[in-house]
Length: 600
Image (cartoon, rainbow, N blue to C red; front, top):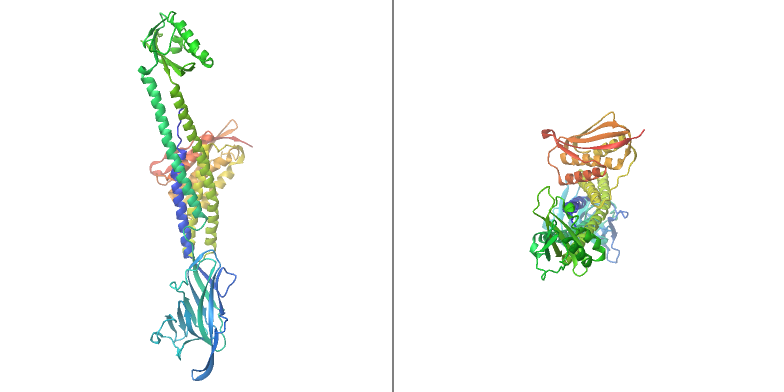
């Protein structure tokens, strides 16, 4: 059995790494702008997933009095408090870095903070404004540039309007903060009339690893599928190649190794005589040699052939009709099952052949091919198995591609939300680029699915009544939507005699036009694209010529070549084909012709 491997499966194997790389790049772009996004939470906002709350520690030593303290010449009682700030991360992401600003609403004094450093803004908005970053757990008085009081305890005065920025310590495990966890940091303040921490600002970044998210698992799944399919492909190709090579060797050996035949006769058709080339005592084929050649052959095969093949062999060995059956052929052959030898092959070769003249003498050969038949049957079984595995893999890749398309659509929605809601132009740009890359990937996967359907015969032509004008409008709207930010100029030339109401496969005509326009836009990036449609009516039908022309480069992307193959495959199902023209320096043109029934 002759088998021709199609190129569809090989192309899918080649496209799979491209899809994986595009998905991986998409994952990197998404995580990059996700990790770079800064979040802000004001006050103790418990409704947020991530926030900071402040409270007195609440034990017996967390509040104390510093009595008779001399403050600017006055004797006062200062209250000291240990304040705990609890960082709540109730999200499913790690907080990679953060900082907190406390806006002072009542006069107070800061004494200590742990475990990070504090940037103190004192006398804000005055000529005496001082800013200093200091570790209040580890300092010397000479280092303090701020105004302060000291009686064994450091007291740095803060007025309403001043503020403190707290920088956490990575060394003391204040960052990163794992998902669904809390972190407590502390500060000591003194005051005369209470403390108010309601005006705070928390700034932080979430961090996701490259292995997080559904898209990463899709990449892993697709990678595994690609590895498995590649292994199956190369093993199958090797088995197929070996099987074909073995089959050809068999055929070649049988036709060329005449000395390996079990029996060889020379038959004189005019004299009705047989001359044995292989000695009778050596030959397995015994014949009643006292009769003429025609009777010898008849009796021989009546005895030797099984009942199922008897009529076939007797007709083949009939010497009275052999000249007519040979005609201009050099040889004819027949295979049958012998009662004692198994499968055998009979062949008549023409001798002293003169063109236009009947054959007078032939060489008759018999060869036992029982073992060869069994080997060939085994080879055919292997080849059939390979074809079955190839179809199963095509179906598997279609399922995988559909599984990928769903998270791609979800990701596009997320990117659009980022574009709509973000106020950071840089992040918007990242999101826009990522969304476009994901959309292209989705279109490519859709084309891969459609392309694999060609190989499995799952694309069917369904004819209905439709509006041709609606198809053109929908294709034009799709092109404008997907090339909105490019420099492409689109124009159309629809002949006035093109009927609107037609009967045919509107879905696949629209699909072909859409693929041709969008893939052209993807290649040229900027320039002119023109859609032209011409028509000629006859006998209730219309012959349409649809052309897509551009002024772009002559080279095509691998993905565009795939789409051309897809379009051509669909058109062939509708009795048409795709044509490509190169207009030298004026760009490229792709067109197809199709006939539709006119309605209305």
